[in-house]
Length: 461
Image (cartoon, rainbow, N blue to C red; front, side, top):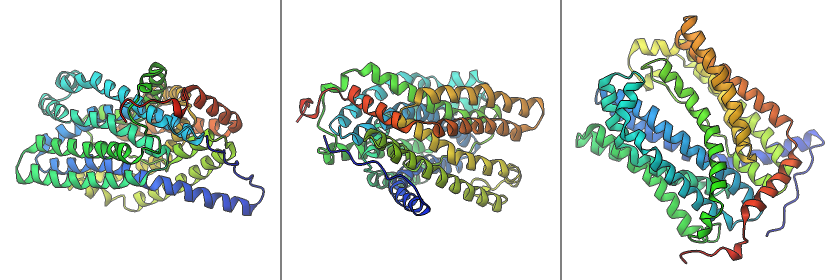
């Protein structure tokens, strides 16, 4: 095992604080920028496909919107959450010098996520009766069900992609995520133009372009790991991947519940407001999962604490800048999505809520990243359940329907739930005993590490 690094120096003066912020910012932006590019590339694939489909007519657009916002988001939330267990385990194992276990964790996660995708496949296959059950228009339900079936292969791609991304992030090998993401977006644009515009395949063509783009990401990342990471965590296929797999499933499920409660929460606005288009806001946590898990795993509690403080402050600043831009261009930015004057006017009326959402959502994902990095998924799942579904959702329904505030009321109530969750997480982070967390991380690495690197026997050399 590698010798542990010394913990970060204590901040005792303004000069120390400036140096700490500068050094921590360089680390966080170095990790976070490529991760942000890779993450935005995945969202760009959905957005580009929707843009091409939008020129096919209202019914195809409605079908794709329902398919992507309901079924793709369901798969995204669950699989991304299940894969987030690797952010805790790989990050802390890498920080502690147990590099050989990273490949084993990756294989365990692949097994669990692919099996989970197989189990959720009936949701895509029998999408039409499910959509009719929640009151969707029959014509839209029929078209959306076909589109959901077409994009099922992308769910299996996500099952491969999410663990590989966490594996690479834990080691700060993040540049490859950005380049592969950019390549996938380029492939998606070319295929959409060829299949939808030139060949006129319509929804099936757009779905095929969507699926291929996701598989470009999945196979690109997996190929990079297997081909170029043999000395950095990948030691070949191993039967150790099946060792203690049920305990791994438990941690994966805790991560999935925590993240699903967040991702599905804002999607509920779409259900509550009928056919209103919901613009999903995704703000990257700028590598905080990696920084916290690495520092805790290496036994550096003060460094982990500094990482949290710096990224929360910088994320809040980014959120305020975004809110200012939204308010300045409140009457103009919606032209990107629609030419309808009435819809653009309606969007401008709730631009203030959007700006406030961006401020709160700039801090909230960072705190969730801290939770994942520290292995607190179970605690945060309970916090999310109470704040989102016991408080925010009922309040939104009450304001929107009982007090007739409409979409603004629903959004305001749900935003209150996010704000309450953010405040609770801030208190939890503020009161955290980082030395105890570092000790617990070391214990977790020893428990999950199993055999040493020399004892791990690959199935294939």
